[in-house]
Amino acid sequence: MGNAQLCSHSDSETEGSSAVGVGVLEDLQAGGICKQAPKSVDPSEMVKYSGPGPWFTCSPYAEMAPRLAAAGIASADMSPPATLVALLTKAAAEKGGADALLVERPLPEVKDGKVPPPLPRDE
Image (cartoon, rainbow, N blue to C red; front, side):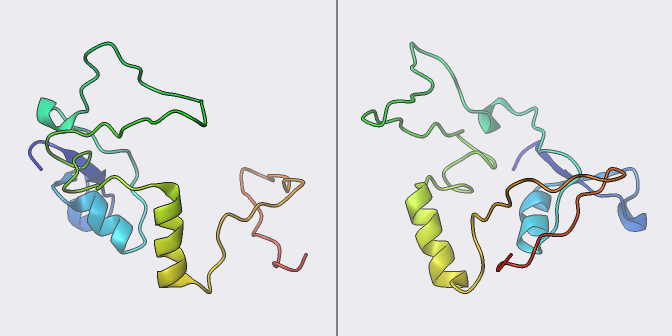
């Protein structure tokens, strides 16, 4: 993936260094969370916003084609475009028994900088 600095690790093995390459994907596939967002200095790994646009739409009747980078994590090879419906269908097929898109209202109070655990589903 070129010069992408994908995930910053803080364990003793990689203290002070960053993984280059597929670190983010490995962490996410293992259920991990990166300490920072991916960084890249390679222009081919960045989405180009050249031309007249539009760059977004709010209209339910409009179509907005995905913008992709030529290489790296924002490319079609590493992050193929997909609709939300397709992603939810895949999630249901692979993890149909798991919860998705749940919300608690009202929001529980954050105490001492910590969010309380979620309520049981029947509450």
